[in-house]
Image 1 (cartoon, rainbow over the protein chains, first blue to last red):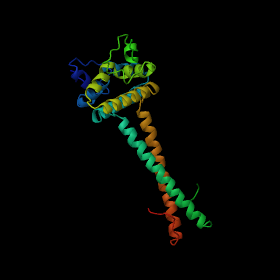
Image 2: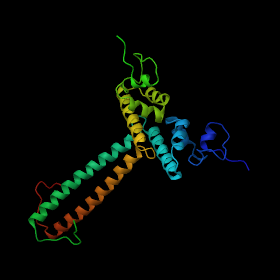
Image 3: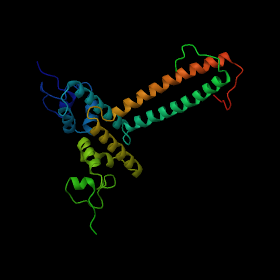
Image 4: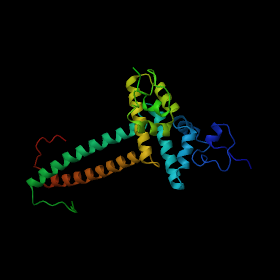
Length: 123
Length: 123
């Protein structure tokens, strides 16, 4: 039975053998995933990252992060996944500021009504 | 006067000319910065990213994000900058949970003491 070429081998027009290291991460039906990764890192660098990791779970996680970075770079050509980091930093800052404000309000109520207790209050 | 080779040209042992596109981003005194970027993306891909952007500010921002991604991958070989994204997501989740808890406490105090008002309270 002939083996279906993975997206990496298909893109490079080569035979996909059973020992293809990219096949587990780049299925034939998701060509864009490979194209983005190849465009940003190049096949050689992706294979190098895989070869330097021994553990299968680590290889899988590394490929997920590589694919994520490539997809983000395709979407945001200037910032890549730093776009995502900036967004999260901003959301965290907003949330921490809000937390500070709400704590100040809570502190005010506590001082005004020192005998009141909050149910299940353990902080 | 001879021109000091940038870290990219120095690493590749070639003459750094005045039109070197990498020189502005990889100064001679920060060789590790270039080595990490070259290791992850390769010079050709870095130059390609630069060439596809017209605006100088965008080029500079793109190189900052490329250098950040490379440094993170050197530090975290499995997750790269996804390590940073996971950390920020976790912090944001903790902060939002905390915010929800503190708001519940505040709501309790308000219901107990509906006439109390918080100074400069505009939420």
